[in-house]
Image 1 (spheres, rainbow over the protein chains, first blue to last red):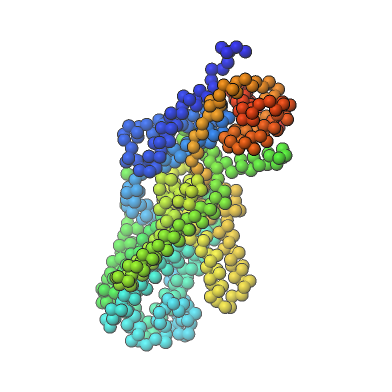
Image 2: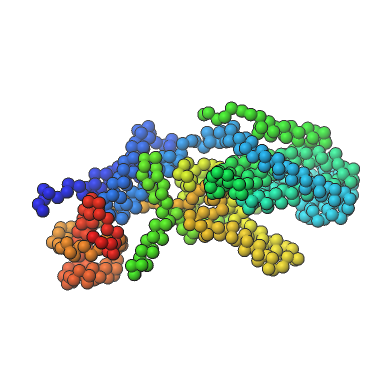
Length: 338
Length: 290
């Protein structure tokens, strides 16, 4: 075979011709990763898709012709990195956040309305159960409410003590600051319970429903203690100011869990995995909302409740919050077109 | 290594490769990250988290002496909560879709359907992490707190919750419970430096050595790439061993330096196999027919 007949294509020449593009693409990606799309000049932005396609084409050719492992690995890694940067970031964080608050969050909550109703019923049922039991026999209370959460508010307590826990004057400064800590503890505790009741959803939703039922039970038991001492209305106000937000959030977290459980049990025409993934996305959006709601509830509980001691005003704020959430979630609006 | 073991090894690594076709029609062939790497990444993240939390605690104690104790305690509690909940979410929402631990291990999260990794998917997969990590611990805690629960009940509870936590060991795609629900995968995404072309950098010395077609036909692609690895490694003992094996196989006396011999054998074998590729013949390894 003479030199003239040798194939004019060689992988060495292929590499020499294209290497500059790969290096340029690598540098551009590094810059993009480190400092974001804003750091790129318009020239570099125009170069990005061109270099990306050049690299992908090099990868295809290299796979078909080259046996240099180091070269193949490099091109593969570079292409993967490039693909996720070129196709991954289509939105700024700001527009992502804006879309979430304006459309995605309420839409996700609307989508789980059936589950929300079911969980609300379960919580109510739990509250009714424990309320009727504690009302007929106060001893039941100790089975329902753990010691560390009740903080001395049990059937043995005097009317005066119970009244003082509701914050109608008489609070010294010390106790009040103690309550801030208690409120923060409640927020992190409630968030954790909500995350659990969501995360347990995949077990066909059964643990979720149990957890929510249990939440209703402690609520009903407390309510029974206070009504038996004639403090029902006051306790209602104490609870209502943050409870509308907090219980709504609890119900939504349960609903998110139940949505996943339902998708696993009844996947419909899709595969079980697909159905679970789809439900998981909706539920994930709901859960971000739930954490925000719990934060609001924690603020209302920690600060609003300490500063506002008038029962009627507490009812008013609680009602306004409830109406706000209902309007935010359920008033129909035009879908996102941006 | 026997032929059967060899084939088994390669098919095992092939099973971890998943098709992932870009809109340009190129299959990126993503590799699923192994359970060990995932675990390593988690441990790294937890260590960093604990370190930050520790420093944060020290800082809050220091601040706490100056200001009101309760406010400091409150901020500490909120800070710890936010840190733990949003560490994973925050990092995985970034453009590299990986926490520091994952970056260190060279892995990242991607959407299983090939689309964009959405924020809700990241949130869903990480909130479920809470369950996977803490349910076994909680089970132990509950068992310790309540005397009436017998040891066996606790054990059953822990085992049950461990099957959730170790879910990723029981499926081919190494999906955690959270990946399953969020529709995500964790795949390899390490950076590979472009190494120099060892064929091009060879000196004129290697030209002198010419192998016959019969001498080059004993090996396939797999052996070629192993040889490449040895050449790039530059370990004289490994080179000596490989050179002796090849000399034995093709029946050549020891007449030149190992690296010169290996390099020229590599160049000529590579040229021969690549010529085969151009004609549509891909010889995977030495067991495959010509």
